[in-house]
Image 1 (cartoon, rainbow, N blue to C red):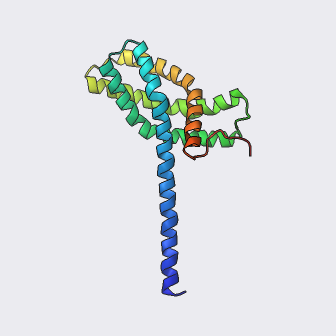
Image 2: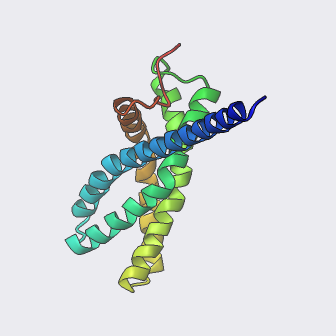
Image 3: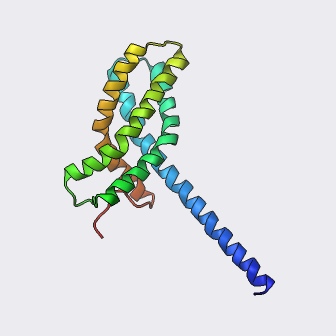
Length: 171
């Protein structure tokens, strides 16, 4: 093998690695975008209905945007994993699709929401652990209810952006 072939092989391997990195970053950004599009307005409306002031809502939503940057890609990967493991497709029953979304979304969301509540207490200086515990219980309960519509939104955003949805049509 001559030097030119060696250099060409190195270039090709570098291109392949770079393409994988770019694809991973793109998939990450699509899953984060889906979380921002669904959860930011939904939870802002819930907080308005609960009587929160606009300053507090702005702070919790800012924390939420940051939390989604951490949590939404793992959530998407878990949805992919369980949909594949359990052979759940668009044609599957509502209950099967709900199981995928509940198992993938709720555990991660419960940790993220607890972090958001603690962050909100630290930011505001108001450490009300009892109210935060109640808010966490209600938030996780509502979060479980949000799991199915969020899964639908994530799959729609993925399809729009050219990324395979977790719950896709049968092959």
